[in-house]
Every structure is written in C-alpha cells, then in structure tokens.
Image (tube, rainbow, N blue to C red; front, side):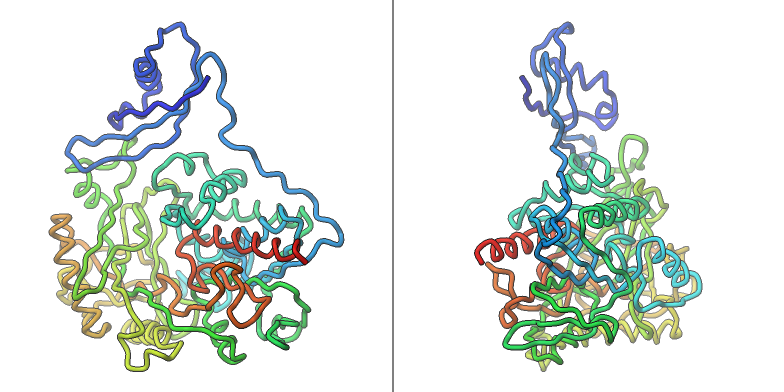
Length: 514
C-alpha cells in the first residue's frame, strides 16, 4: 500500500531525514515498528512570511517498497525502410521531435547549422574573451539550441499544451537529476546540460536516426504548395517528404528565406528591455527577510510584473547565482542573456526586465519584419554605444550615468551609457516606471549596487510562421511544420520540447492514415 503525505516544515527539517520519517509516521499514525519507505514527491519554498517554510509532499509505501518513479522509455532500432522526417535545428524542439520520431517508427534526419556541444564551447570562449563572434556557433546556434549554454530552466506554464511530465522524465533518463521531477521550479544548469544533450544525440543515432552538424538550410525547392527539396550549405540538394522547422528565435535568415519564397510569415509581439544584476546576497536578503542562502535554502529568485501605460513590464529568465553572457549571433550587434550553473553559486543574480512590444507600436505594422527590424535596431545601437565591441551599454538602476561601476559578471565588459540614449521613450519610460514599482514590491530593489545591461532582446521570436492549430502544417505549405520558439509557438526548453513531441504525433497520424 502506498499513499501521498503532505505537510509544511522548516528548511532545516526538510533536510533532516530522521525528522521527515518521524513526521510521516505521525501523519499516518504509524508506530516505530511498521515498515515504511518514502521519497520526495514535490517541494517548494514559501518565503512570503518571515518564518520561511517548505511545502513538502512525499510518496510513502507501507509494508512494501515504492514502485519506480517512472518507466524508462525504450527506443528501438528503426526499420531500414522507416519513413523519414527531416528536422531543421537541434535545439530542444528538434531533439525531442527526433526522439519522438523514433518512438513512432519514423527515421529522424536532423540538420543543425551550428557545431556539437564540445566544439561549440570553444567558440563561446572566443566570444567572451576576445570578442570574436562565429555567426554559426554561439550561445544561440549549435547543438542543444539556446538553452544548452543558457541555463536549462525547466519551469513552464504550458501544462495544457502537452506532456510536461514526459519531457522531464526523458531528461532524467538522459542524465538530469530526479530533483527536476520534484522541485516547483526545476533547473538543470549550464554545466550539466552538455553531457545530457550528448546522451540524447547518441540515442537518436543508436536508434538509426541521423544528426548532421554545420549543415545549414540555405534554400527551398517548392512546387504546388509542397517542399520537394531542401538545399544545405548552398550546395547539397535533399528530397524531403515531411520537413519540421525548429530553428529557434534568432535564425533571422530563415525568416528572410521564407519571405523570399513567398511563404507567409507575420510580425509577432515580443519583449525587449535590459538585464539587471544585483549581488545574490542582496536578493537573498530581500527575499529571505535578511537571511542568506545556505545549505538549507537555495539562492533566492524573484518574479515581478506590472502594467505601465497599458503595457506589461516583467522579469524574464531570472538567474539566481548566475552570469550575464554575450549572445549576439551576427557582427554589429550586442545581445545579453543570463545563465546559472547547477549549484547556482555565483555571487551575482540577474534577470531580464522587459517591455512588451507590439507591431502596432510602429507605423508599418503590417510589415512582417517590423518587430524584427526594431530588435535589430536596438542591438546595433548598443553595439555602437559600446565602441563597436561586445561590451554592453550599462547604467545604475537609478538612471544616473557613471564612470564607476560595481563589478559585473559580463566578461566582455561594460560601458557607461544612459539608457534613454539607447531606447525610444515608449520603452525607456515604461522601464523607468516599472523599476519604481518593483522597488515598492521588493523594497531595496533599486540600489546603487545594481547595474542594468542593455539589451535583453531575444526573449522570443518577433516573427510568427503561421500554421494550422490542429495539423501543425504551415497554412500555405502542406509538408512544412514550423514549431517552437522560432515559429512563435513556445517559450523555453519544456514548451519547445512539447511542441516537438506534439508535431511528430501529428505527422505520425498522417502517415498512418495514408
């Protein structure tokens, strides 16, 4: 017999296995002689009151043993004549689509413009230390996509979109800790993700699939509303039957290619702003009522949202114990993002603070590139303001220009620039007002020890690739399946992975019905 036991305890008690066992026995009215086994089911921290609590939930087996937390997926070897699905992009959407294809008896052939995770790491080092940007291998492009070297946060609100649990269980099967099945805000860590991504790649290959790196989609051959062939690296011509487009939010050349081929795309709302950095101790003090994170409490995070002039301004991709990274994908631009190691033990905390941007903010709102062009404009202005380098324009949170900054985790360096010289007034004024509001919600959020870095601009795709909501097919091209962040249908690792799973399910159904 097994059951679920819930209670609230202190952070110290939550780490004490003897206390937990005695508390579970008390909750179930069991004596000390009754055999039991227990494990964490869910946990979350409640720091709203000065006395911090842990919401604890346990699976408990009485006079028996607990069943495995989940059944590992069996990936069988594909048949030699298995139908082929071509996938463009090896981010979470592309990789999970490939895994799902294997389970459906379909052969995935994945083309990734960037390099594998190990080779990619060397290009990131060059970007950070020498400002040398490889436009095909960077924080956004390469095996695992933007998430591989940008934290691995797994929290999602997309639970109605598909099987979140399946995504998390597959991540555990390929090397993530079971904690991601337990924690309210699961997180893997940039230092752990590469090995996990390599394990997924190996499984796809072992099952009979293919993954090709440094293979960039450069053209499409279309006839009668169907893609007949794709071109790779401006030379190789490959016939396709089903083409999944999982290229991520920064593959601007793909949007341009679709436009050139008269394939419908649309401007899409996105968000843009800055990345603010405090010391982690400062955020701990604000969130934990003066207490610092320790062996019992993780590095504190925050989530903030407000409305300014009928537009949302909110925190985005908050990274406790994290680092701000250079995430440009082309020369002549500056882009920031944040990530955390698995232990979240860096001395700084950072978060995007971004303003919602709508196509209607611009005169030519019907232009599919109107939001993308604005994104490019801001990134280029930041590059110019930083001396045409990968340094970032930065300022104190209080808006005063200064030549003296606290140390920043952004390794290429920072340059003092007033942010009102970077952003148009409809963005700058909303950011300014939002910081004042956030300081009321988290007293002390505005401090001279906090620095804002500009811009945080790759929050989501500024372009939508329209598709049928049922079949996932492009509304115009019958065998093109645009998915996940790059197409405008996801926002993070888990939601992108779910979109990949769901898309392949739809493709498998069409093949069965042939």
